[in-house]
Image (cartoon, rainbow over all chains, first blue to last red; front, side, top):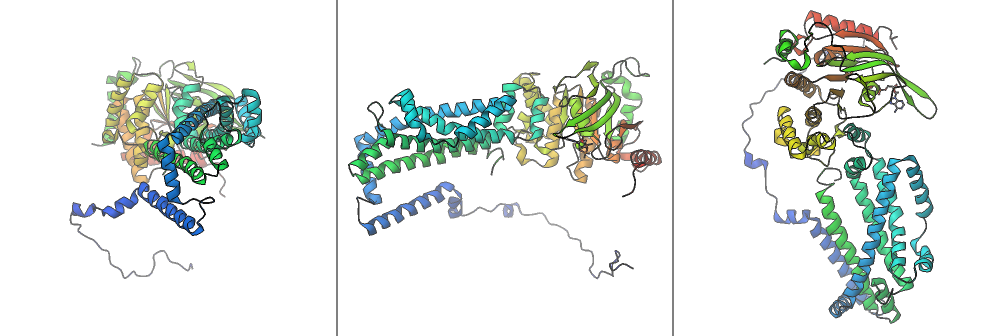
Length: 293
Length: 285
Ligand SMILES: Nc1ncnc2c1ncn2[C@@H]1O[C@H](COP(=O)(O)OP(=O)(O)OP(=O)(O)O)[C@@H](O)[C@H]1O
Ligand SMILES: [Mg+2]
């Protein structure tokens, strides 16, 4: 005899049936309060975080009361204002940004070319993996002396180290993205007769877009860091220095508030690029397509 | 209206008025089959071994057939379908489409996969259906768009033309994949368990829809399944494959079996026959 009988003992519960009246459509959709909807906006939440950080900074600086070591948020703001008004800061920013964009674009392009080669041929893949494992651990700044030797004291040297810092990190990311594209999607693409570059452009790149964007973000951050560091090390190129040079000069002259103003500009540009450019691109692409949440 | 009646109608007397798959000689098979699989052995090369998936499989698919490959899991059905699609090269034998040996994948054989991720998520439903038409340069953008909309209408997704795939249910995604394949008007439509990941109700509905579409369009279908019932419902001919490595166990006609004959004696008898052929050598575990 089994312990459990499938027919079971008599179940005392009775069968139940309901007549469903039509649902009031107004109850299905209820408006949410303005406050809740505002708090849904990441801009609002992030602004609150930033404000809190600034307040904390101001408090710490006032307690310390040593503007030479830690200028307060207000002092930095006024230094920033003076720097912007005199046009010096803007000139530095534009000098830095122009070099940065050139190096970043060239690095991104090379990364894409190298990874395209890597997914097209076996030898290309070996080339990519060998090169990335060789050069990726090499700090860009360590290459700066070499670059100065080869390209002289100018923009070319900066672009060289920028490309180095962007290229390998991005190539690794993009390649990982390409390799993660589902087998079914690949077969579908080949089924329609896509081959070579058209296959990469119409299947692999869009399918790997989340990884590609992550690669671009990392590349962007690496590029900024490398550029500021390189400018700090070898200063002005051909008379017009960038932001790193501005920070370095002001530190030498103990204008700490100007140093902070320069750093704030680096941070603000980073925030703007991340929150406006990258966010919009993501919202219009991978988020809209349900590829990332 | 009953699918069964319509199906029998088409398969019976009325196939004459469908020039597409009734050439002048209605009695005997046409000279060159649409798809000829001739003595095909397929292998996978792994690091240590060469794994034989199918062994000397031969069969012919005629124009307008709904040809089903049926066999237990792991017998090489998907492998066979991939070889016909051109993703694998036979180790032995040849595969010919309209008499020409196939080389690599091509838009004359469109595959509908089981996986839902076969639809590029970055394209709307309409763009998904247009994609092969444009990518293979079969049609220009305008014409492709029109054909896409028309085909979507046919599978009942006209309203969702501008939706992105991630907003659709599993059954709707498979319908898009089917529409995308049909819009290409391939020489042969290849389906690898397209309904296996669907719930039973949706699967039944999709089977009905596929048959209805076949009645309208008269495409040539090669359909993989491991469900005997599905094979009988969908197919007019079934090829039974033995367990690993896949070899041809039998080829049967089952045009009389349909969704509405499932209870009938003849259909039940055929189910028994198929079951016996597939499993008679199996030792109970
Ligand atoms: N990529 C691969 N590498 C090595 N062996 C493989 C590979 N894919 C499949 N096989 C082997 O080939 C055989 C046939 O596999 P296949 O996927 O064609 O089976 P199937 O009939 O489609 O099964 P199912 O009904 O479960 O989908 C299996 O024994 C499997 O182990
Ligand atoms: Mg399979």
